Length: 471
Ligand code: GBH
Image (cartoon, rainbow, N blue to C red):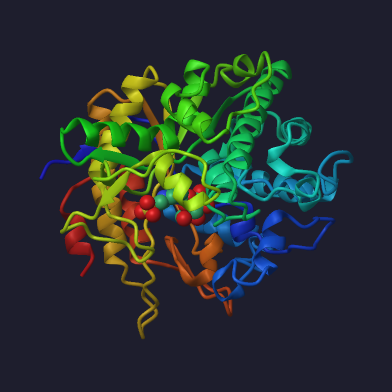
């Protein structure tokens, strides 16, 4: 089969986030984040794991950068921990906390790897949560002050800035579904959190412009794809609602300056509305330079045969089901990764085309894409993760098809460089290109690492090779 070439200068790399890899939870003045608290509450995280040590990346800059170099990465996406930089949430800046990121950025630049920095990947200082966290407007202002400290410390050396990782997870998964910190189940809390996260994003974009910093700034939402199960109107409508809740709720305010109308009305039926003040939507829709996209999975979606009436019952699970009235269909034949998410590369292609058409074809970096497979080293120490290679191969073909269809794609960072603290799953789920033994912290590049390296170095992919390499 023919060689699939990517555009010249395409920015290949790998991603991680602070709480998932750093460890050193109480060093150099870092204060607790909501994940330190959450992971200590019984029943929240599998096996009662936490990020106290994680991959110990706080002490292993050289080792991690050497791995990136060996991978052929041209960029490294990492996040900064707010509780290291401003341990009291608002107020004094902790230079020791910033020093770690200065060292990391220096090491990356010395290795000719472009730093891609995420300002918020879920580790809110606990002291701010105690004052209402994302449910209160003040947190958006505190975020901008924190962001300004990071902007100033790394100005000129970091060129690619991401404000927020996955607002849907920050707001919905954490405040409506209770699965992530702070573990609430309350629609209004979720919608308020979503609004303040968007506001924080917009204010940070404005601050970035005001400071006149060189480089580009954007946000990185997660976009699970919803494909209509059939062309029946009820199924098309269900699909649209699913996308509105997941994707448009965050993207429409940024690119169109308003929340999606139907979901707004459906929330109103539950007595819930975003706390919009005058001028907010202008701030939120401040022009960004690119869109970061995290894609993992998708599903076929249909309407329930008998919809639950949309009304307040006090039962959050039932109300959420009524709000969406969406049923997913597990179509026979889908492979699932070890975390249970469907292997759905066609959804990746479809969502990129949908973004192109709905939001005016903005420049896009794929900021996360990857698969959970829990393969362990064989007796010879090799990690044969052929299933992960197949995942990458199929998703990179989808990406190539999207580029050929005119999508304005600029780069791709695989999730993740390392096996790491997988949030509510603790260390029981592995997404890394590099295996981490969480007892010894030994790092072992997997077969997928070697496969991806070939793609990165050639800036091209030859479909079918994955199958041969996997054996
Ligand atoms: C990302 O979120 C995070 O940014 C990253 O920190 C994390 O380690 C990584 O993913 C792996 O989890 O139940 O089939 O409907 C992923 C966002 C949102 C993707 C929920 C999967 C549900 C799939 N996820 N979505 S399904």
